[in-house]
Amino acid sequence: MSSLLTNIHETAGTRKETGRTYLVSGNYEYYHYLCDGFDDRGWGCGYRTLQTICSWMRTNVNNDVQVPSIREIQDISVKLEDKPQNFSGSRQWIGSFEVCLVIDKLFDIPCKIIHVNKGDELNSIVEKLVEHFDKFGSPVMMGGDVDCASKGIMGVHVGSKDASLLIVDPHYVGKENTKEFLFNKGWVKWQKLSDFLNSSFYNLCLPQVKAKSKQ
Image (tube, rainbow, N blue to C red; front, side, top):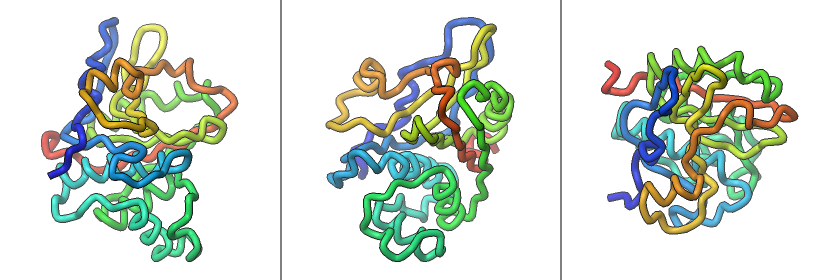
């Protein structure tokens, strides 16, 4: 049985200000740097976010599929001819497009890719995220260019002045103590769209499948 914490976004709660909040549905495990003893610090954030999404898929879609290791993810990318042979065993990062391919291969689930040219244009996709969490409830992966650190998006809040995304950050290194510890240290947080970098583009991967609780 996995020792990973589950549903760590719950410690962030819902936004207390007026507005609308939409959250991930169903259970998932929190994957992060070194969580399985494999040292991927500095390059593995995309893989860890993918593993978190795969854990959600395993719980809510198909429990016959195991969460793949980083090496298994790389091998899948090579077999799909998306990456060259020397990608397996490397420290090359992956982004939203690779995450989309692996999810489709493992679970036969399509994903929608949304590209945003720069941070101050994230407002243009708020309603798309609202629709996604309202209809599907599956976790979203977000990666970028300058802000290249991949992260999980577990919810969106639409306030009167600004929208916020509920971030689950895979860059944590250490033994999880409690969900509250991760929240207090900022590994789980609500981040306003105005705090994202305007100098970076962003890609989001939205799995198009409903949680069991949504069906």
